[in-house]
Amino acid sequence: MNRLRGIVNLLESGIWDDFRVDVNADARFPGDRFPAVIIGEVVWLRYRFNLSLRDIPALVARSGIVLSHETVRAWCETFGPDYAGQVRRRRPRPRDKWHLDEMVIRMNGVQHYLWRAVDQRGVCLGVLVTRRRDTYAARTFLRKLLKF
Image 1 (tube, helix red, strand yellow):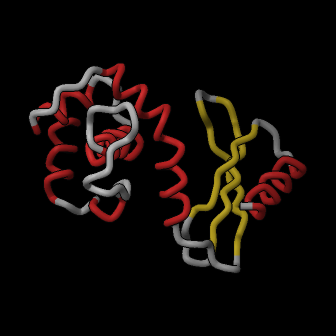
Image 2 (cartoon, one colour):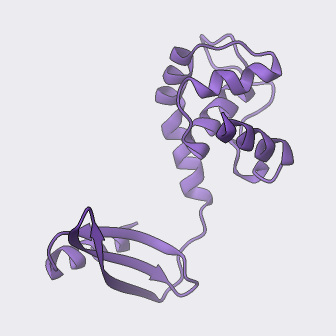
């Protein structure tokens, strides 16, 4: 419950307003009784804070909106890919110089290799973890990053 209280404080502070789903306040989705603003807010909460389906109805109940967790699940399945696309388009483009870092880590006592792609600003572009030091996998990982 402390996590929910912290998220409520973050939401009320307004610092996340730039990352919300862009929808028209008067828009309605066909077949839904809730306006698009409420649907967008629920989908944003689910994907931005990785909340469980049962936490979100408790958060929006503070605003007087009664939802079931099944409604939240259906909205996230329907509108989640659109939201992810909006976030992906707004993400700043990586710079032109990239670095591939390699380090050895231990997970549950087993040695793994962590490959991390970073641009010149230090923004992490992707992470790959392998059990063996596999140069082919690292090259494939970097090629996949170059495609995006």
